[in-house]
Length: 65
Image 1 (cartoon, rainbow, N blue to C red):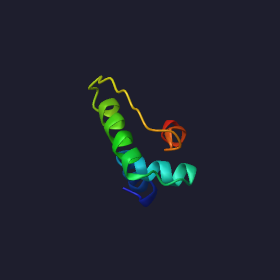
Image 2 (cartoon, helix red, strand yellow):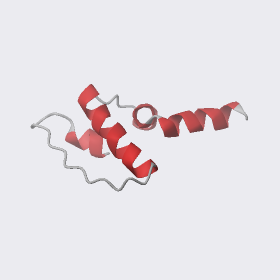
Image 3 (cartoon, helix red, strand yellow):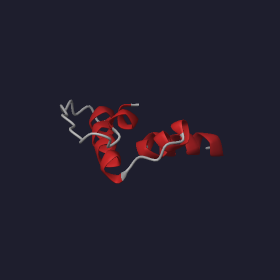
Image 4 (cartoon, rainbow, N blue to C red):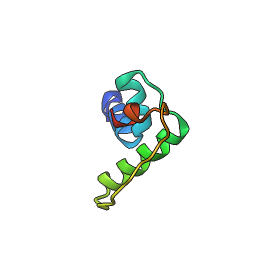
C-alpha cells in the first residue's frame, strides 16, 4: 500500500484529525468527543440520534462544519 493511501485511511478513521487538516481548525476536547461519536455511528451504521447542546460561544458552528 502506498503512503498516500495509508495516510487517507488514517484520516478517515480519525475525524478530528481530518477536521484539523481539512479546515485548519483544531476541535476542542468536548467538540472532538461529539465528532467522534457521530462519525462512529455513521461509519458503523448504528443509526443513533444525537442532540448536542453547547452554551453560547462554545464552537457549535466549528463542529457542524
